[in-house]
Amino acid sequence: MSDGTAHSANPNAENTVNTKRRRFLIGSTTLVGAVGAAGAAVPFVGSWNPSARALAAGAPITIDISRLNPGELLGPMPAWRGQPVYVFMREESTLESLNARTELLADPDSEEDQQPEYCQNEFRSINPEVMIMVGLCTHLGCAPILNAEVIPQDYDPDWQGGFFCPCHGSMFDLAGRVYSGVPAPDNLVVPPHYYETDAVVVIGLDGENS
Image (spheres, rainbow, N blue to C red):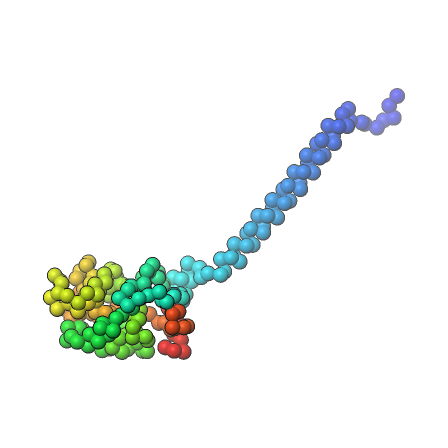
């Protein structure tokens, strides 16, 4: 005789459905929580390094030059504002030769505003041994090639060592000063920079030792 209350024909099936539903809800909640945690971690981790937009706007970069030897160009080449930066360790003989043939240069005294004031000297640098330049020709922005050997070249029998732009023949000495009569109008750009230590350089900012 029925008391009017509806009963499941299979109690075990009802328990199975409830168990599966409970597991689904727990699993969904756990997944959402994990995704949320991962989403929160992305900007946190990313904040340790400058964003691409910040770098393009000129965020400073820090480079270690402790392993750079005389006559070497730093590699891999660092970039600042999306531009290659040449960091070259000049030898003593190179420093002595910088004023040897200044009559070949268009702006030997760096009178044009292509460098910070603290680099307006015969070396165009803070540390005479370390040359830091933006590696883009001032003609059309090509990348000049380092040729530090002081021997006559096909493009210049009086070559004193420096950078040659194979695109249109512009030449620069090992202080980044442009030769007279070439397509490039100005010396290579010296970016703002300072030394945190003797071996660590910050490019993109002026400092107290600048």
